[in-house]
Image (tube, rainbow, N blue to C red; front, side, top):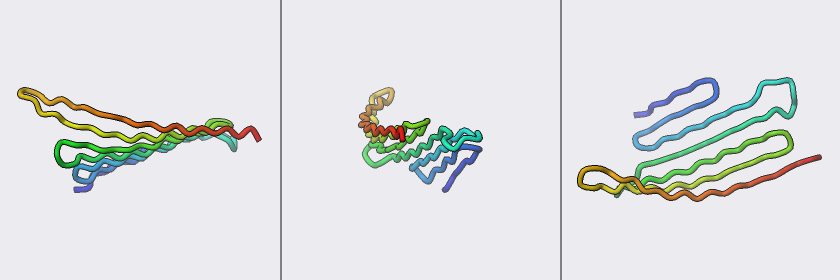
Length: 100
């Protein structure tokens, strides 16, 4: 079943055990170089208690642009009376400045 939500600055949708999310943000002003942000994420539950995901976030403010990339791994450990979730995250950061 496909399920989705949409509001002024984001779109989220899910299909079975996969989840997608897209966020857009910009300041509406009368400037050509207005700050803006965009983010995309994906996560999915896999077999054998494993979860995988990735995200990309890009921000542009004035002369700077930051882009972050994330990769996620999780494992659900079933215990006698509860569940324990373990995870790892790898991050990459890309930066540029254009002073013109």
